[in-house]
Length: 85
Image (cartoon, rainbow, N blue to C red; front, side):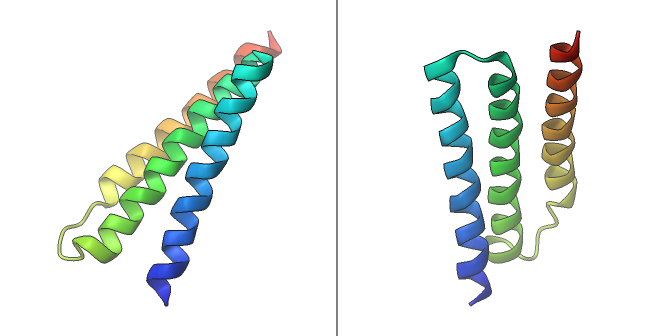
């Protein structure tokens, strides 16, 4: 049952990233581009989390998960700062 919940989380994050990219391509709003970058990395984070827990539970992928989350947050922060100027 937990695998289904994590799988739905992966699908939801990928779908959110897709919607943000599609919205950016339609409007060309720069902040949507930065949000899209952030959500792509967050989706990758969720994929790595799923792989870490269910595919290869004996391998610790915590460093990769934390790195992708950090990249996502930095991209969002850069986008917010860049658009404020």
